[in-house]
Length: 293
Image (tube, rainbow, N blue to C red):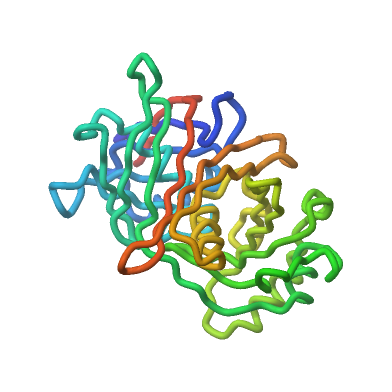
């Protein structure tokens, strides 16, 4: 019976059972197409990646990313984690992954002994800012009062660097009180013609850094411990709002889930638009094999 190896790792953490878990199928060539989504659902993690030969031989791999219910164009913690697992494919400490949203550039991070401990990934697209959402609908999605939503810099607004999220600033003391209301999510999504998903990144300022929480119950993820694609888009949005040339800070997510995650964010301006990267550490957890008939 054919088998396919996989590993699981915790991403954006230096402690096992912290951060965001990820499963990586390191050689997915023999996995039937019809099995990819069921496998991701069976593993029941925020995302699972399947590594395939690249279309361009200059790249390290083509990587397909699945959450519990659908395939994704781009996601951050799967790129950091997959890079950690495939570090032996790096050329001078760098890799490039083909994903549906484009090409993700990766720089491996090493400790003082030269051992790979994590990676920094650059989002495949420049910042795109989309529709605004009403304070009332987003507050309802988060089970918060409208007064908990901070609009001094922006109203709830979609931002994307390959994967769209509604960026919502909330009061610091309200962030830990938020929880997803699935019915309100469905109502809010229904008001956005053509939108295929609704995911909210709620954030609060913590001095020069931020604390974040991400909710996407309609995609099978009521809450995510660490969301790199949301945090890079937030970094890009904050730089855009500031009018500056460069921005760097730390984002902490997953605290309320008991899986604290730390992400190092950098955003900068280029001639074609605002780019951003997210970096963090990884810890290996499990190895196994999946069988196919």
